[in-house]
View 1: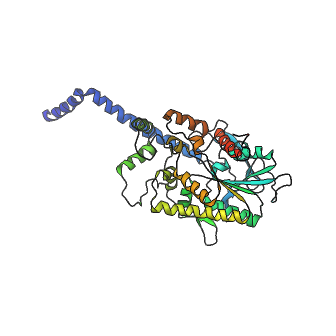
View 2: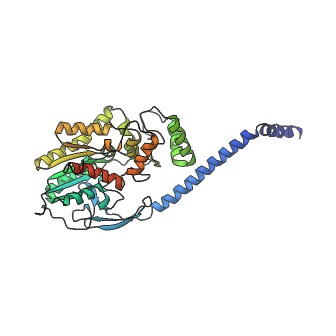
View 3: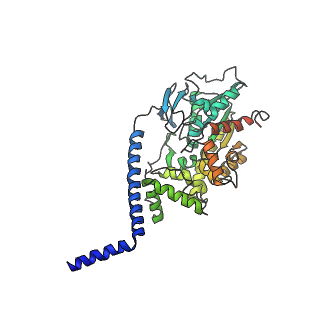
Length: 403
């Protein structure tokens, strides 16, 4: 009895000698456990909600991978938007449009010219009705000047699909148009690298399926660092700790070229593709990246030749994500690649980066810009962001009116 009581007495005495430390550690451990439990309950709830059927206009395409159905109409709900319910329509070509209407293959005599836009979800105008997308705004303005506008953009498109779809529209559908405007997204680089390839039949197909857990890939040239494992746990399993580390990191301010934790979007279980989207523009060009750049420009070379063979004027545009705004990525690698490509090929180039990014702004000012022009908790532009895109594009046709 004496021995046991001595041990208990010794243990109690340690707690009694450091009551504040004891209480602090108990609180920290309790809060951490509660943070993990509540975060996982929330994730389970949201995964159930997201797994519910959601009406869509998307359809698989044998030739260029995927598209919208023709003459479709649907009403989708987006909880992160103020006006949650959005009505979407596609025309007889399967293009997002103001209504489910028939589009003639030859331009109407009422129009002087026809412009086709193509791009990914930004050009499609994800989570926005057609009238609030930059293509829809441009359409409304140019229609007054007898210029017809069509939107061939669909989420997750990239240069290999831009080229293959336009080739199909010109050679198979026999669609006639005068200008093509390609809005190249930052994610296009990674879609080309990880997602798509051309089959022997000349059709766009998926590469080997990439892992959902590949943000920290298991098959890497170097071993996974402990800090990366900790980051992964913080990202995916906590909420309070995540925001606390973000705030601390923001105060310290990293000298790294990569964006800080606070500047990263909260995306759980990032795939290799998604991680690439968020980081590739901040990396140095190595042989692997050089190969990927050659691949992505190869299909734009094909698209350029296709347009020139058919007497179609080509325009290229690039625009930033919130990551670029927060990191002052004004001279982005994304811009450099396409600005140089356009200069070399004598193609009209529109750079939207200076319209959203300014050097030397305080962090609070950058946050204001992101909130003003982007959808909350998302990388896509809101109505105001789309208005800004449309205004600059329209300057090309009406320099005095939109100066």
